[in-house]
Image 1 (cartoon, rainbow, N blue to C red):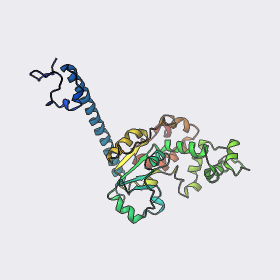
Image 2: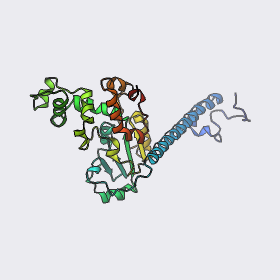
Image 3: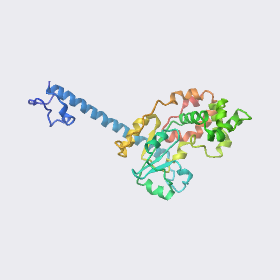
Length: 310
């Protein structure tokens, strides 16, 4: 059986070299012309799938960047106000011409491992300004409330000495009214001393906390990476991490040199957010949303109405 529109006798043992599909592994065809056509058709369809997938991801990037431009409208696109602290989250890879702004609890460990050979340079403002014009700049973001839950699980439940001394003890004293707390985090863990998720939210909402910059693990993402001051070439999402990582590596032509580690099932899923926030009163949820509103709007995450409305 021959495809419509095709005439003549096909030579046994070879595909028609003039057909587009025969460019794909034609040497694998059998002497049966129908099987030959079927094999190359499947290869061709696979090729089209990859093309359409690439188009889909490219369109997704266009929309994410367009949203940033829209939300940042009217903001002075200048780096003059960025200071040394603001640049701490930037990793510069001079070899490949890449600048990565990392956000804790958003696949940053995997990206640091992937870019392990890239020095975290002591970036000064004048040097960064020059490199921003020519280097590929990217960041990865995450649903802001899921980001908070992940930070709580990692730093409030599995704390080390730094987080115990600087944050956990303070939270336990203020909101659980616990006294005579140990000074060693291992002793505290053995005694089961851990703040609740609501205690953590109380700490974030506390006016005393807001007089200082938040700790980077729960700081607003836009305050770490300044998307209204820096025009990023690529905006990845944790929710589509593997696909976005592959697209980024292809974009910078490193897909054959660097393999992004596979990600495991995310223990903090967006579906479980409601369960985590059950202990948080409605008014406190609304206050929390106002603090992280810019992250929701800038990076295209929907307003969680199920958490914020009666």
